[in-house]
Image (tube, rainbow, N blue to C red):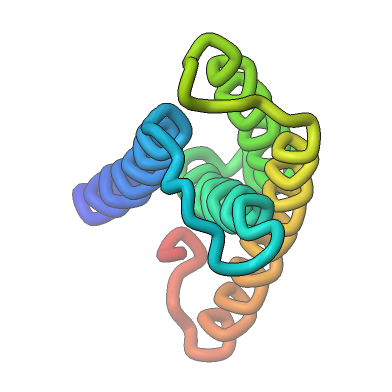
Length: 137
């Protein structure tokens, strides 16, 4: 039981740290340097894909009743978080809020949640073959 609680704390701590990093990066002044076209969209996609992946990872260990809904909950929360950060940027002079950023956030959230679901399923299959308990993921 203690090992499971420690794993939950580590997973949720990692997820919350990722979300805090997104919030920090969303409200600090932009770098102003563009290395390739649409690099901000790629960054938005990657940040929210990572957030949704981590949310699936955390939700699947927290409560068994959430397991079937973890990808949907993760994608919805990450997309809503992206919408809120974009709305918050409207009030910061050095930042801009663009609908395309939200689209990149939402697509990243959906693909991150799907990836998290696939990774969890692969781990479960691997652990089932090796005889490790189900709650260990």
